[in-house]
Amino acid sequence: MNVVILAAGQGKRMHSDLPKVLHPLAGKALLGHVIDTARELGAGKICVVYGHGGERVRAALDAPDLAWARQEPQLGTGHAVLQAMPVTAASAPTGSSTLVLYGDVPLTRVDTLKRLIAAAGGDKLALLTAHVDNPQGYGRIVRSEGLVTRIVEEKDADDAEKAIREINTGILVAPTAALARWLPGLGNRNAQGEYYLTDIVALAVAEGMPVVTAHPAAAWETEGVNSKLQLAALERVHQRNVAEALMEAGVTLADPARIDVRGELVCGRDVTIDVNCVFEGRVVLGDGVRIKANCVLEDAVVGAGSIVGPFARLRPGTELGSDVHIGNFVEVKNSSIADHSKANHLAYLGDATIGSRVNVGAGTITCNYDGANKFRTVIEDDVFIGSDTQLVAPVTVGRGATLGAGTTLTRDAPPDQLTVSRAKQVAVPGWKRPAKLPKPQNKD
Image 1 (tube, rainbow, N blue to C red):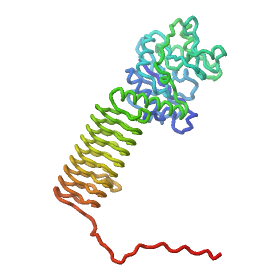
Image 2 (spheres, rainbow, N blue to C red; image 1 turned 120 degrees about the vertical axis):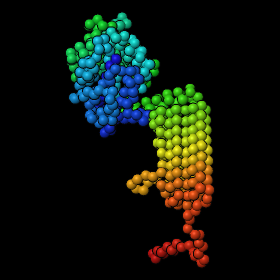
Image 3 (cartoon, helix red, strand yellow; image 1 turned 90 degrees about the vertical axis):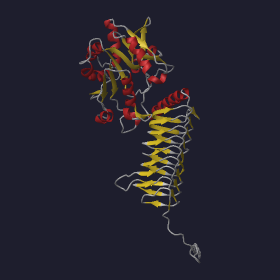
Image 4 (spheres, rainbow, N blue to C red; image 1 turned 135 degrees about the vertical axis):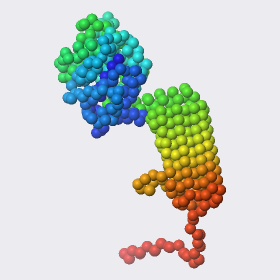
C-alpha cells in the first residue's frame, strides 16, 4: 500500500501567509494529521505532493519515512498524483495499491480507510463517497443500474446531475499500475481547464475494472478546510470526539464542550477536569487528580491525588508527585515537586527540584535566569518558604529550613534553621505623607 497525500493547494480563502496545510488543528498541522493517519495504516511508502508554500511545508514536516514530489504549476488533482508516480510506482511491487488522501482533510478515521482498502481488494478502483443533503460544490457520483460509471464535477454537471446527492470525497484507492497507466492520458477539457483525478473512473469503466464505493461513518470525516471558519468548525468536532473518548474511559468533565486537548492526554482513574482547561503536548494525570478551571498544562506529569488550579500553568518538564497542590496563578516550568508539597498562590517555580512536604508561600519566585544562563534551585524535604521570597539560583535550601517572608536568598540556606534577609524595620517619627497640591483657580 502506497499513500499519496495532495498538499499543494494555496488556500486563498485562509487569508494567511501560512500555507493552508500547516494551519493547526488541535495543535498539529492539518497535513500532520493526515501523515499520522497514513502511518497508522502501515503504508509502505508515503509521498506528499507539495507546491504552494514550497520548502516551508517540507521543512515543517519532513521525516525519514516521507517522500516528496513538487507540483509546479498546480494543474489539478490528476496532475498532482501524476507527480508522485515516479516515487510510488517505480518501487511499487506487483499488485500494490495506492491510496490518495488530501492534506486539508484531517479527520478521516483509520477504520474508514481500512474499509475502503478492503473494498478495493487490490484489483478494483474504490471511491470513498457520501450521501449529503446539500451536495453543492462537490463532484457527483453518476451510476447506471447501480454501478458507478463516472464522476461529474459541479461546474460541468447538468441539472439532473446536480440533483444527485451522492458525492465524491476525493479519497480513493486504485491499483498502482493502473494509476501509472491512466494518469498520463488525462485531458483538461472541462470548465476549470484542469486535469481531474476523477476522470480515472471513466477510464476504469472503459477497461472493465470494477468501481466500488465505501462510506464514512460520519460526514465530518471527509470535510476539508478552505477557510478559518471551516477550520474552527473541525476543531470543535475533534475536541468533542476527544472529550467523548475521555468520558467513555471514565474521566469526569465538567463540560465536554469546554476542553482543548492539543496533543495526548493520558488519564488514570477518577480524574476530574473543570472547564476551560488546555492540554498541550503529552500530559499524564494520575489517579484521582483534579484539574480546576482555567488551567494550561503542557508536557507535564501530575501524580495521583494532586490538585492543580484554578488558573494554574504547568509548562514543559513539570513533574508533580502524589498529593501535590498547585494553586491559583502558580506557574511551574522544568521542575519536579515531590509528594505532599504545596504552592497554593501566586508563585513561579522554574528549573527547581523540590522535595516532599514543602510549603511555598505566596509571591515566591525562583530566579533561575541571569540574562544569559539558567540555573537550578534545590529545595529539600520539609522546607517552609515564607511569602514574597526570591531564591536566586543556583541555591539550595537545606532539609527542614525555614525562609522568612520577604527573604532574597543568594546563598545556600542551612538545614533546620531560620534564614531571613530583610532590611531592619524602621519607624520615622513626624513623617507626613505628601498631600496633593491645590488646583489653580480659574480667574475668568
